[in-house]
Length: 531
View (cartoon, rainbow, N blue to C red):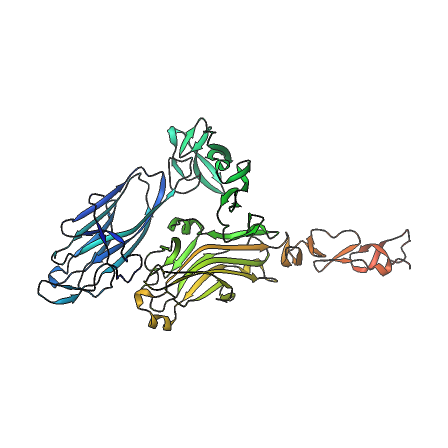
């Protein structure tokens, strides 16, 4: 930073994250420009940033009504905040001060929460603040807190790119040629590395003392050797198969606890999508220690009503949402949406997520698969209560797990179109909590698992029981077949058994009581087998 200073907020702050905590600043008229340059970023195609701007004490007279704080990303102006005389909150200073004209005036602080996501490819990034603060007598100005910057990186084979895959390359390392290839019916640009890929370079070898070689599509990639983990007792093929107590095995690594979307069997975390016979993820997102807008984009999640920051840290847990997420909604509900499409017939959808209730807010949450298949707060399990909220001092935060199996038996594949979570903003919540505090909540670890029918089913009751078949197939028992076996006739898309009372071995297609061949060496007589 071009200037570095810290200020400790007072011990009566209304917000727990500011209560006796440090703020970067306060910057006033002596610091009209403050910036930091982030250098040597790895190859990437987009950048997301969020931060808090503390407007400290605001201003105290009309002469300074044009005071402002501006935020620049590189050389581009992103936001301008006017500093003006207003009643704020007890955030970083006492609620009243003694001004130069001997009057007590309320100059509470206010917070502006910034979130931005934009295309960015430069290896350097400059975060800059420009301000104009006229009145120094009361020490007003601005502070900065909670800066989070994330980038969406290129595939390791690319030197620069416009997307995350190996076919999104714009330039290649070491001057390697850029080749046009066809993948998933889309023409893209890929780099031709005949060696080993690591950290956006093409190498002649990997460091086999710390790494192993993994084939990923057309590339051989140097990756971390999981067997080098001190908590791994036994390892095979770079997959840990036995961990020290109390660790669990998840995706070949030792972890302290299994992901929420898994079951535990003898210290092994079993992915819930692999438990059904034909289970598959339609959505699996927000499981990392941190996540940002890029992950929402890749998962094709659309947000509605998230008026300020999209993410927040709450009791050391990173959330989608958080305090102040619904500021200014005024009875407009908040949505998390995801379009869904089934590849073939299915019978069940399993939905799970974790959500935090912050500041004892009473929430009504609808979890829906389409507008007619909704669940209202019914399938939740209380997990734990935090001693402190991540918003207001003296409040609490609670963690819940949600899980529901939505029944789609007898419905067609086309009946699935959308998954959404709706936070219902009720009028009594608005009245009981100041508007700036309305709807404090957070989500993470979202997943949707579809349980498909067996191949060629049109509808089914479960993975092993077809109820109807696709055109060109016939129901035989619980399965759909393309041709009925001997001793069966094709009728109304079903395989109907020849009438055993007539001892048919083969039927005439015009009717299942007429035979073309008899069992037990009997001779056929007028299309019937003698008894």
